[in-house]
Length: 380
Image (cartoon, rainbow, N blue to C red):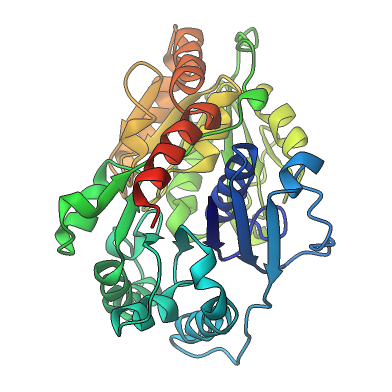
């Protein structure tokens, strides 16, 4: 079988949850001896042609086509405009190759032009679309964010409805896809996960009298950084027993000066991220919108309890057994949850529940079996 994977970059050449998911797709298809033509681009200083993020055996089944992502001056809708240009560049290369493929997996807007041409009658194998969290249809605040959503919604809906199948992580994401008018028979629920070798053997039991929190991500509104900082300032004022570590690029204006808080900046090494995570007890993910957040998966794989907002497919990962699931944009719920964590007497049992759930359900060895079964059914 040969699959074309059209992506908006793969980790570590482009940083992001969607990019990490694309990396795992390519990796585990190759592990199953499925040939992958990988269409992607580079935003790092790494040598993208070496593909040294894959091992020798995997590289035998991966053929990479590198297409630089177009740039333009910034204006309202510039990302949408350049995404369409990128989809056109991909189309010109993939068009003469279409008969080679059994299935085409597209991420975000990468298949925009191809899907449009197929609708006009271009012979083409089945195309699956994955917009991950469909975050343009989730909650947001601020004029800029709402304008971005307004611009994206009609195009995302149009592409989604024209695709042969639509991938969903489940939870609220499936409900969003259904609301767009997609028939249930065209929706494929397939969760994401983490590599088995990256899952800890056991939890790091809490021995420190201070509850140790950690956040992974960028300091942007959508990630709930403002609400999180408000909750942390409340804990400081109450002189609560806690520490808090931030992994990711946090702007100076968003940093709180307190001895209990540590900012590590951007960390690209997954080994270092794992090391930092295992020194903590609870990951906090207070996002307004998410898909199937890698930060939560990675923290659970390291045996951490979770405080997260009930958005996207997060409810498939977080429940009362392994953490606290709260409403998005609810300051009091977030602050109360952090206080409940500090007062929790059975945090180790919640940490163990996280680890068990990842081991038994959300690892790529299990997910890839389901994925191959799906592709066999969808193959031309």
